[in-house]
Image (tube, rainbow, N blue to C red; front, top):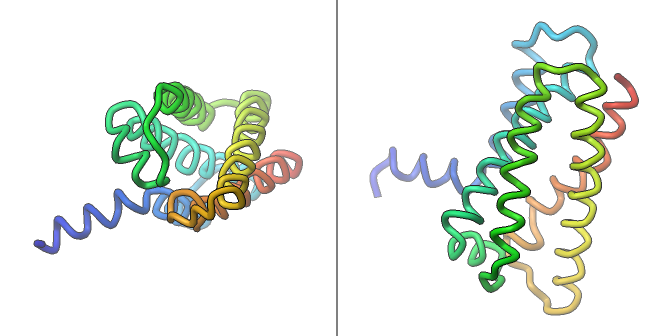
Length: 158
Protein backbone atom coordinates (compact mmCIF):
# COMPACT_ATOMS: atom_id res chain seq x y z
CA UNK A 1 0.00 0.00 0.00
CA UNK A 2 1.51 3.38 -1.00
CA UNK A 3 2.55 5.78 1.75
CA UNK A 4 -0.11 8.40 0.87
CA UNK A 5 -2.87 5.78 0.95
CA UNK A 6 -1.65 4.52 4.35
CA UNK A 7 -1.57 8.07 5.73
CA UNK A 8 -5.12 8.76 4.52
CA UNK A 9 -6.38 5.46 5.94
CA UNK A 10 -4.67 6.09 9.29
CA UNK A 11 -6.17 9.58 9.50
CA UNK A 12 -9.70 8.42 8.61
CA UNK A 13 -9.52 5.54 11.09
CA UNK A 14 -8.38 7.91 13.84
CA UNK A 15 -10.46 11.05 13.22
CA UNK A 16 -11.35 11.48 16.92
CA UNK A 17 -7.69 11.45 17.98
CA UNK A 18 -6.60 13.66 15.09
CA UNK A 19 -9.37 16.19 15.81
CA UNK A 20 -8.55 16.24 19.53
CA UNK A 21 -4.86 16.83 18.83
CA UNK A 22 -5.68 19.51 16.24
CA UNK A 23 -8.04 21.28 18.67
CA UNK A 24 -5.41 21.31 21.40
CA UNK A 25 -2.76 22.68 19.03
CA UNK A 26 -5.06 25.35 17.60
CA UNK A 27 -6.28 26.47 21.03
CA UNK A 28 -2.77 26.52 22.48
CA UNK A 29 -0.77 28.10 19.68
CA UNK A 30 -2.91 29.66 16.96
CA UNK A 31 -6.05 31.11 18.47
CA UNK A 32 -6.89 34.73 19.22
CA UNK A 33 -9.96 33.85 21.29
CA UNK A 34 -9.58 35.56 24.69
CA UNK A 35 -9.79 33.44 27.82
CA UNK A 36 -8.23 30.02 28.16
CA UNK A 37 -11.44 28.07 28.89
CA UNK A 38 -13.34 29.84 26.09
CA UNK A 39 -10.56 29.14 23.62
CA UNK A 40 -10.34 25.42 24.42
CA UNK A 41 -14.12 25.05 24.51
CA UNK A 42 -14.52 26.72 21.11
CA UNK A 43 -11.84 24.63 19.38
CA UNK A 44 -12.88 21.35 21.02
CA UNK A 45 -16.50 21.93 20.01
CA UNK A 46 -15.50 22.86 16.46
CA UNK A 47 -13.20 19.91 15.84
CA UNK A 48 -14.05 17.10 18.28
CA UNK A 49 -17.81 17.56 18.11
CA UNK A 50 -18.30 19.41 14.82
CA UNK A 51 -15.93 17.74 12.39
CA UNK A 52 -16.07 14.44 14.25
CA UNK A 53 -19.89 14.60 14.20
CA UNK A 54 -19.86 15.03 10.42
CA UNK A 55 -17.40 12.13 10.11
CA UNK A 56 -19.44 9.82 12.37
CA UNK A 57 -22.74 10.86 10.78
CA UNK A 58 -21.47 10.33 7.23
CA UNK A 59 -20.09 6.94 8.21
CA UNK A 60 -23.37 5.77 9.81
CA UNK A 61 -25.62 7.19 7.07
CA UNK A 62 -23.61 6.55 3.91
CA UNK A 63 -21.32 3.65 4.90
CA UNK A 64 -23.37 1.76 7.52
CA UNK A 65 -21.60 -1.56 7.04
CA UNK A 66 -18.23 0.08 7.72
CA UNK A 67 -19.55 1.85 10.81
CA UNK A 68 -21.21 -1.26 12.19
CA UNK A 69 -18.12 -3.39 11.54
CA UNK A 70 -15.94 -0.86 13.41
CA UNK A 71 -18.16 -1.24 16.50
CA UNK A 72 -18.80 -4.95 15.89
CA UNK A 73 -22.56 -4.45 15.77
CA UNK A 74 -25.17 -5.25 13.16
CA UNK A 75 -26.52 -2.57 10.84
CA UNK A 76 -30.04 -1.35 11.55
CA UNK A 77 -32.34 1.61 10.84
CA UNK A 78 -31.37 2.99 14.26
CA UNK A 79 -27.82 3.41 12.98
CA UNK A 80 -29.14 5.78 10.30
CA UNK A 81 -31.06 7.73 12.94
CA UNK A 82 -27.94 8.10 15.09
CA UNK A 83 -26.05 9.11 11.95
CA UNK A 84 -28.45 11.98 11.31
CA UNK A 85 -28.20 13.00 14.99
CA UNK A 86 -24.39 13.03 14.58
CA UNK A 87 -24.69 15.15 11.44
CA UNK A 88 -27.07 17.58 13.17
CA UNK A 89 -24.89 18.09 16.24
CA UNK A 90 -21.82 18.28 14.01
CA UNK A 91 -23.26 21.19 12.04
CA UNK A 92 -24.53 22.86 15.23
CA UNK A 93 -21.14 22.51 16.96
CA UNK A 94 -19.39 24.00 13.92
CA UNK A 95 -21.78 26.96 14.01
CA UNK A 96 -21.13 27.38 17.74
CA UNK A 97 -17.52 28.33 17.03
CA UNK A 98 -18.69 31.79 15.94
CA UNK A 99 -21.41 32.16 18.61
CA UNK A 100 -21.50 33.25 22.22
CA UNK A 101 -21.46 31.27 25.43
CA UNK A 102 -25.24 30.78 25.49
CA UNK A 103 -25.21 29.01 22.12
CA UNK A 104 -22.21 26.91 23.18
CA UNK A 105 -24.06 26.02 26.41
CA UNK A 106 -26.89 24.47 24.39
CA UNK A 107 -24.39 22.41 22.38
CA UNK A 108 -22.63 21.34 25.58
CA UNK A 109 -25.92 20.30 27.21
CA UNK A 110 -26.85 18.16 24.22
CA UNK A 111 -23.45 16.61 23.66
CA UNK A 112 -22.86 15.85 27.33
CA UNK A 113 -26.11 13.91 27.62
CA UNK A 114 -25.50 12.22 24.26
CA UNK A 115 -21.93 11.22 25.15
CA UNK A 116 -22.95 9.89 28.58
CA UNK A 117 -25.66 7.82 26.87
CA UNK A 118 -23.24 6.56 24.23
CA UNK A 119 -20.76 5.63 26.94
CA UNK A 120 -23.38 3.79 28.95
CA UNK A 121 -24.53 1.79 25.89
CA UNK A 122 -20.98 0.78 24.94
CA UNK A 123 -20.02 -0.17 28.51
CA UNK A 124 -23.25 -2.16 28.83
CA UNK A 125 -22.45 -3.93 25.55
CA UNK A 126 -18.95 -4.79 26.78
CA UNK A 127 -20.35 -6.24 30.00
CA UNK A 128 -23.18 -8.14 28.29
CA UNK A 129 -21.32 -9.51 25.26
CA UNK A 130 -17.62 -9.04 25.96
CA UNK A 131 -17.33 -6.82 22.86
CA UNK A 132 -13.88 -5.26 23.09
CA UNK A 133 -13.83 -4.06 19.48
CA UNK A 134 -11.84 -0.81 19.11
CA UNK A 135 -14.97 1.13 18.12
CA UNK A 136 -16.97 -0.20 21.07
CA UNK A 137 -14.61 -0.31 24.03
CA UNK A 138 -11.37 1.50 23.32
CA UNK A 139 -9.82 4.91 23.03
CA UNK A 140 -12.90 6.34 21.33
CA UNK A 141 -15.02 5.45 24.38
CA UNK A 142 -12.43 6.93 26.76
CA UNK A 143 -12.31 10.18 24.75
CA UNK A 144 -16.12 10.30 24.64
CA UNK A 145 -16.39 10.05 28.42
CA UNK A 146 -13.56 12.54 29.00
CA UNK A 147 -15.33 15.07 26.77
CA UNK A 148 -18.62 14.46 28.63
CA UNK A 149 -16.86 15.71 31.77
CA UNK A 150 -14.57 18.33 30.17
CA UNK A 151 -17.20 20.25 28.20
CA UNK A 152 -19.39 21.20 31.19
CA UNK A 153 -16.24 22.07 33.16
CA UNK A 154 -14.90 24.31 30.37
CA UNK A 155 -18.32 25.91 29.99
CA UNK A 156 -18.45 26.62 33.73
CA UNK A 157 -14.94 28.09 33.64
CA UNK A 158 -15.97 30.27 30.70
